[in-house]
Length: 255
Length: 305
Image (cartoon, rainbow over all chains, first blue to last red; front, side, top):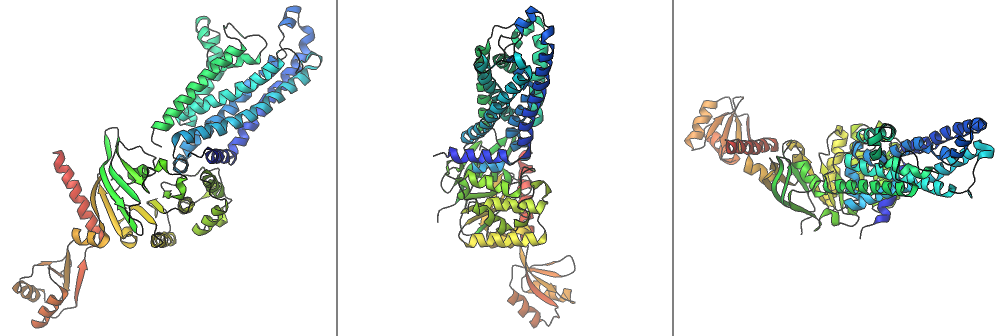
């Protein structure tokens, strides 16, 4: 029988024996906090200047968590590198000689990467939320407040899923540069730019990071028919599609 | 004795290029089997197909009676040295430890194979700093990790210094003497002459020969008796008189074909010819190989006309 435990420990061992893992996870945390702290401080400082309408629209949850959207680019790089370095360094050949069942190899790699992403996301999302609320002072919300737990748990799922989505895509493309070169503009520019063009914006709301990101906010952002949960469901669909495409690529192509 | 590796009508095409074309052979345990062919003959493709890295277009390859993917803990059955690729940021020891964990091989075995290949001193170094020879030794260590009965070595002497070459030759012979199957590819015939007991020769993805080294040489090369003499005319007449075909070699020596040392010795004595040397000559493996593969190329060229 296929030995999933051994294959998983192999993948976990590979992840923790390269420096880039620590750099990327560290950057995920650092960037998220580095944005959350000053934005919390700024919102706290300017709250007094807001008029009634602006105060009503003020979202202490979303303003804290939106900074993980930038930090998670480092998590995405981690996911991409976990897959593509096997191909760029050529270790895919010794890895597949050790774990020749392609499905088992791919499943254990995705599982190991996802578990690391989940653990990192849990720490980063909670830390980012806590840091923002600390800076917001008397305008902060607590865990028992409406929508807070949903946003935190949803945020953890959101960042984890985007990392898993990136792993699936990386298994298809096999190149770090190509995968990151495709994902970064998608996350950074295309989503933002498309969202601001009226008709195209309707399609942009279904992009993986835009749809999934709705869970971070109290109210849906922009002109969208999605809410937090349906947005997350759209991201799940993207992730499943990317994983399936990655599986077919790993299974069919020569290493 | 059942074959350790069975290649059955293996065909591999990459787009329009046929790398391996209906190749069948078996590799037996207990001896070093050389896998010869000029560059581009399909050796590496065949090796990669054996360990399941390349999917055959047609045919199949069995290792220890099964397809490679069906082996439980494959590193304990088959050790493969293909092109050596290590993540440059990972240490030598970590590269091996990861592979060991994948097949539930105890971590202690990593230290043993590092000792065996002489890399203990650099175990903690990142692979980035390894020389080509050291990387090759690391590849051998990875192949030996699971103490496998079948070893596949693709061009193992590449990048090794003379000491390393002697070491790998001795290692291959020792592994074969232990009853293991050692299947080693090379495009260097002279290298195979020193290490292989048996030869599988391919050209253009097809089998050209499957025989022992001595049989291969005698079948594919001409042997002759070399005669070095200051009286070549007299010697030539004497040999011709006895019905022996003689040709003149490049440096003025005579080459007597299809005869024995004894016949030539008796003949020169009877005719009182001064000779400096009479010796049997067998063409080297290199020459035999060149002859065989040039035939294959000629055959191909004619086919395409």
